[in-house]
Amino acid sequence: MTDSTPGFFGAHFLVTGASGFIGSAFVREVIARGARVTAVLRPTSNLWRLAPVEGRFTTWKGSLADLGNRPESPAATTVVHFAASGVNQRFDDVDAMVEANIRGTLHALEHAVRVGANRFVHVGTSGEYGAGVDLDEAAPLRPTSEYGATRAAATLLARAFGLRRGLDVTVVRPFAVYGPYEAQYRFIPHCILKSLNDLPVDISSGRQTRDYVHVDDVAAGIALACVVPGARGAVVNLCTGIETTVLDAAHRIAMLAGNQAGVVAGARPDIPGEMWRTSGSPQLAGEVLGWRARHDVDAGLAATVDWFRRVGIHLPEYRGRA
Image (cartoon, one colour):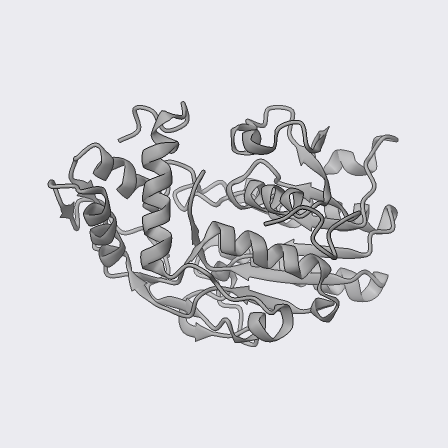
C-alpha cells in the first residue's frame, strides 16, 4: 500500500474504539493510505495494537459521553464508530452492553452532527442477523444474544438518526474476523497459541460454521466504505461467502503450526445462544465498494499463524497464554 491513496489524502477520520482489534487494523490501514486519524480512547486504553503507527495519529482521551461535554472535542470529516461492549461471548453484563452499544452510539452520532462530519460509518456485526447461510443485507435481524440484539438496535438507531438529521450513515457488518492482534481468549488465537506450544487444542463440539474473514481485508473494506460515493446510506456485509466449521479451522491451524498434540473436540462446552451456521453474501460489497476478500481461509490462517510465530508470541499480551 502506498501513501496518499486518492480519496484518503487529506481525509480526517475520528475513530472510536481505535485500540480494539478491528479498529486498530483500520487505523493502520488508513494511515498507510495517507489519512489523518484522531483516535478516541478511554484513559485506560492499552495501545499495543497501535504500536506500528505510534506517533502518526492524534489521541483524544475520554468516554463517548465526554465528546459533547468538553470544548476541545475533536472535529473530523468522517466518524468511524467501532466502540462496543460484549465482544467476548462469555461476557453477560447486559447493562454495560446497552450503555456502550446503544447510548454510546447515540453520543457518537450526536458528535458527528455537531462537528459537521460528511459521513458516519457504523461498524456493526454479523451477529445482528443471527444464524443463517448466505445472508444478504436484506435478511431480517434475528440476533440470538444480548450482544447481537444491542448491536442490531445500534444499527437501527444510527440509520433512523441519520435520516432525521441529514447525516450520511453507512453501515458495515463484518462476519467472523480473525488475524494479527486478536485478543488471546478468542478462538483463532487460542488454537494458534496452543499449537505453537505443541499442546492439545481444546475446543467445543466444533460443529458450528463461520464465515472467516481476515482482519486486513475487513479494514480495507471499512476504509472503502468511508470514501466511496456510492456507499452513501448503504448497509454492506464484509465476508467471504464460505462456511468453515470450527473443527476444520482448528485442524488447519494445528497442521500449519506443526502441532503433534492434535485437536480435542468437546473439551469445552458450547456457548448458550451462539449461532450454529453463519455465512454471508459478499455480492453487495463487490458492487458498491469494489471489495472482495483477498485471503481465503487457508491463506489467511497461514498468514496469521506466521504472524503469531514471528511477532505475537513475543508480545506481553500473549505470553503465558497457551
